[in-house]
Image 1 (cartoon, helix red, strand yellow):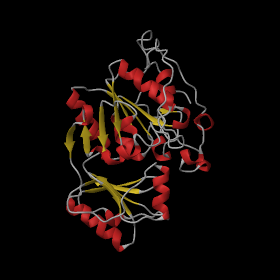
Image 2: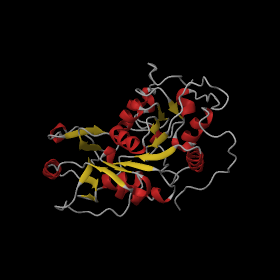
Image 3: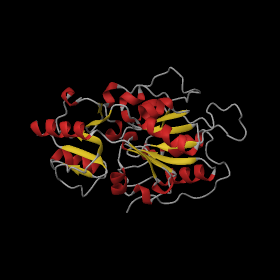
Image 4: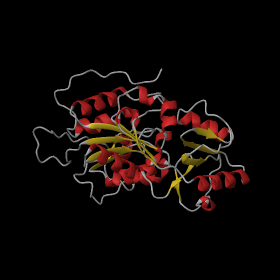
Length: 319
């Protein structure tokens, strides 16, 4: 693949149908799919480089910054984040996970992030975890979702100020294993619970338009059907965090459909090589997969990392 010089490029990438929907599960290399070729540019020497400078970089977590197969953040991703932060660029997370699930993963202990957009934009945190915005799902809509799911015996995995799953099934166990989640309480919601994301977890996936209750947006992902407020997105959370810091430009990396808006609105938006096929069809700029430290490779090849940096990689894996 040849990198394209503008995020407005109309070229769409699509994986061969024989590869299947889940590129990461098949562990298909971007080298095989797209003939990946990094084009080196220099921030200091090439003033006509194709991508603009940015003030902040936002990373999706699962399958983007965090490699679940390895059980942590790749060493080279850690190196890239330190380099960016050393240049004065804000390094932030932007995840569908709410704060309890980010804490459950342990990722907040691995790096001093400058900000966090959590729950697909429902919660925004500034420096040192300071909450600057919160807008969870309306309690009546959440109650409707739990009621509809119970009537069909579908487990609900819900996260907000707390996290729970209504039933532990083989499908739920598989989901938790694949996203490195553990020790989630099995219970029904309590009156003081608030939720940003509610997910239906089925072993045999099917469409559920009946869950589109007023004020709720449905989003089909590889492992679940997610439900959130229809006027929120990761991009809206990013915009609020940028406003908080007085910034206007950003870069983003993601791998799933809930990353689409933040990538489309970014000054530089990059999809992971292991991303959902539907995302790869919409985002022209693609980096190698997380298993190949794709974020570091792309940033280095495009001159966003300090040329003078000789710091060796530091460990970011969870033991």
